[in-house]
Length: 105
Image 1 (spheres, rainbow, N blue to C red):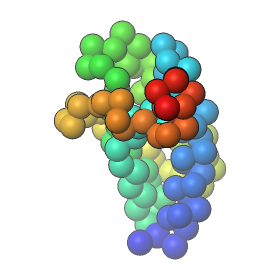
Image 2: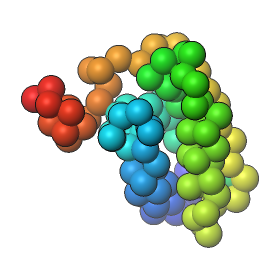
Image 3: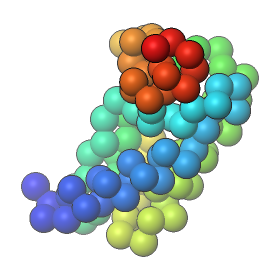
Image 4: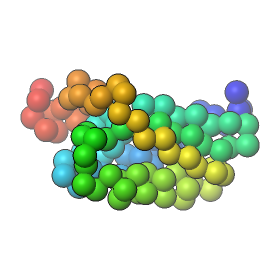
C-alpha cells in the first residue's frame, strides 16, 4: 500500500465533503454515494460511486464535480470515476450526520 495512502484518502474525503447533490443539501460523501476509494503507488485515484437515482438529471454535473474536487488535490495524479448502480443507493447508506441534517434521526 502507498505510504501516503491514508493522508491522500483523508484529503479526498475532505474534498468530497465539499461536493453537494444540488437536490439534497448534503455532501456526496455523507449521502453514502461513495462506495470505494482506491489509490495506487503513483497516487492515481480510482473512485467508485453511485447516485441517489439511476435517472438523475444532473448525473454528469455531479460526477464532474467529484472528479474535479479530487484532481484539485496536488498529491493526486490521474483520477478515474466509476459510476455503478449495484448495489443501489438507499437512505440507510447516509451517515448519521446526514440523517440528522435531513431530519431522519
